[in-house]
Length: 197
Image (tube, rainbow, N blue to C red):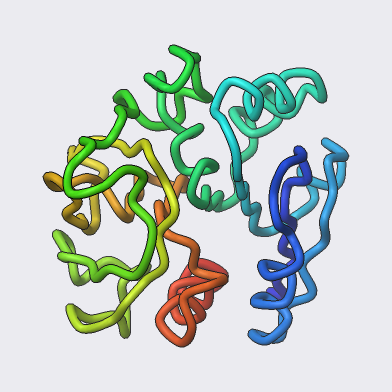
């Protein structure tokens, strides 16, 4: 089956680096907010930059919240996109998509806020297909002030003033708190693993 990846264009995200990262893997990812085109994709990527309330408002305005809840293909939320997969976010006390159980919380002020820079993962389920070829020594790029708690969906954690969920999966729903498109070879491997799911 050929991969027809789609990046959800809901505003406020830097799409270029993600489109290019997919292209380097041999996948021409389409950028769209059309529900029909989202439904026809084999893989859907939900990026996000900015604040949770505005991002959810943009999804609701376009009817994409319903589309993403009802779709059945593999879905990958990146950074804020991962946070929107949860039921609730403390950022603006906003209701998320509810595809993952739990609440997104504000990270501690120490050692600094927000969490910005390179960090490694502590795998919880190293055998999961999303983590194939990714090890303890691989570095990923993070830029965020909020994060989900470590719970049953967590595949790997990262520590910044305490552990948080850095990579999650539950059924067809996946989330990366870091930016794989900005994380060099390790990020490309993560995207490759997702697109192979």
